[in-house]
Image 1: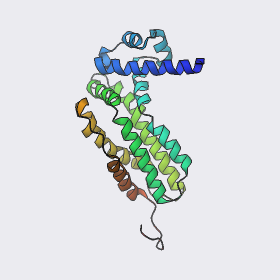
Image 2 (image 1 turned 90 degrees about the vertical axis):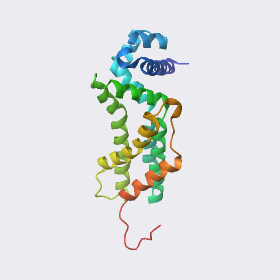
Image 3 (image 1 turned 135 degrees about the vertical axis):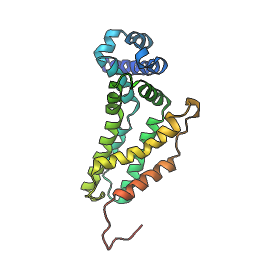
Image 4 (image 1 turned 180 degrees about the vertical axis):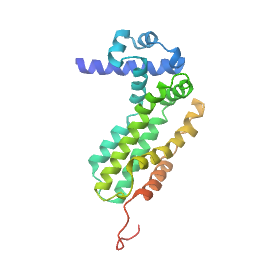
Length: 215
């Protein structure tokens, strides 16, 4: 294994250890020393990689939610040519995002943030930057690309539209994941998520010309 691969593996090991320690002890109760011990690394390594404990929490959250970057890049490179293809891409993005957000490891960290934000408001900013801003930004980029291809209504403001899609998906994460005991998490069916994406698509798709057939 080369040096780059070793460094990447060490980084992931630290992030996994951080997630476990934060989940067990909370943000305030977790220390960089505990995380370093759990990861088999030095505190100096943690500080050099992540800056401080808040930065480490942000990276732990980010590492668990890769769908915004991964699926948006695929969507933009796919160049959908029809409303049906664009709707399918939105469904793919929605499914991948919900799958990431329903991971027990992610939900455990989200509970830590919710519980401790009143005492440490900075946690909310890290959570927003690590997850919400990325997801909204990537969906907005996909909608902008769709608008350029004539697949999205040009009157649509893509940032609020992206928030609308992400918000509808978060109802599943909140009600069937975050508010449930870890043993009772209920990921939604793929058909339910695709139906949500289809409903959203009908609201933002480009108007049909009079001579177009209604599918």
